[in-house]
Length: 40
Image 1 (cartoon, rainbow, N blue to C red):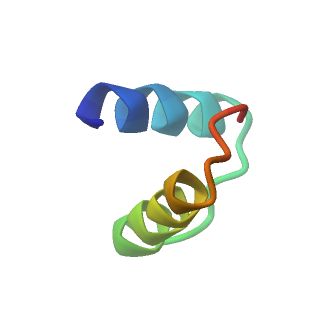
Image 2 (spheres, rainbow, N blue to C red; image 1 turned 90 degrees about the vertical axis):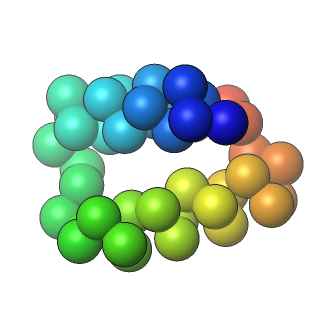
């Protein structure tokens, strides 16, 4: 899961769409994983 998060984080950061705090980012990521939305 950690590698998936890093991959997602780097993708989001490259696209400049992360404006949230690290905690909010992690919460958003966790929510996506719960929903099974891996096609980010």
